[in-house]
Length: 81
Image (tube, rainbow, N blue to C red; front, side, top):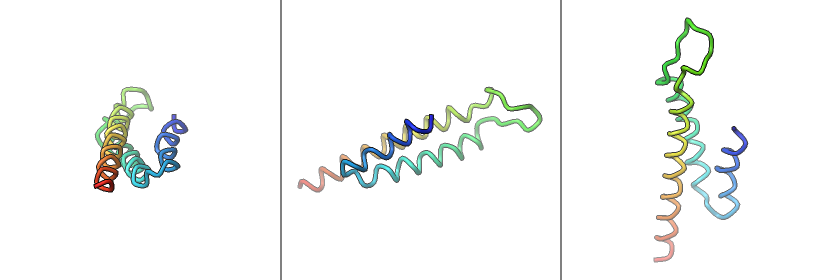
């Protein structure tokens, strides 16, 4: 799952979007941290899919992608003015 997400955040840099990869990377890291903190991890049970951290991570990552797109659109609009 890491390779498609890495391509999603890196390929736009080839098309001149300079801030998008950094915003996506920050969202990825923030999503991992929030998913681990708020995902319901239990120390006394073996690893299983009752941990909701993956969903928290994915939602934060998608929100960072949307934010990165919005910031790049606003930046291009300001550059054309």
